[in-house]
Image (cartoon, rainbow, N blue to C red; front, side, top):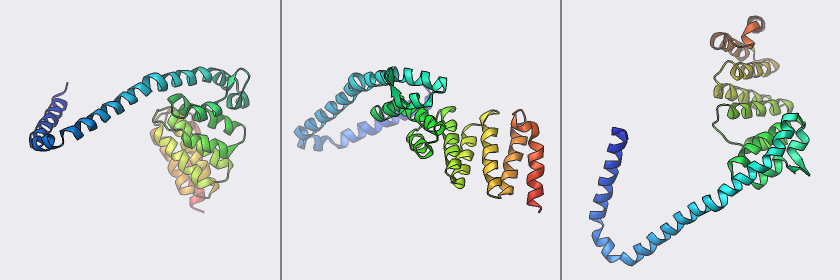
Length: 230
């Protein structure tokens, strides 16, 4: 245990002890009420752990088991069966809906969003992706990037650029970050915003020189500068 953590715990104990000393008369006066209140807290704590052990964990396991079939279809590129399911098992959409309170239900929203995107259902893709939440360094940027793709298809270019830039920020590596920066730059070009497009290209050249996108980024930089100077 660190000294800082130990000191913090000691301060908390001192504060509790002080509060108990000051509360002696209060306890004497309201002892029965406090006992009932304490009992209620114990019951609530018991219910929480009971729910986690008897309901939440089995639901999590059940959701994960159902995802196996959908995952298999997804890997095969059969997005319709992965999304909707069939006789062999439930699809991501149903799992996301029925197990929304579980981690498996959460990740099912991610996969359902990607399926909808590939099936051309862009607003439905956004609905699922917006229901997904994670700080995972892989899934979080991919979800934001997928939102950007959906917004592009829906002609909502401001939202698309914003999603791509957020995805790039969430994925500071030589693989996905430059890809999302390029996608955002493409949107900026479509909007005639050559200044921000140039900024993204220069970002890739300076910060991600080992990336595939950096290989021919100079020509994009030159094009952006020419259009700025028109």
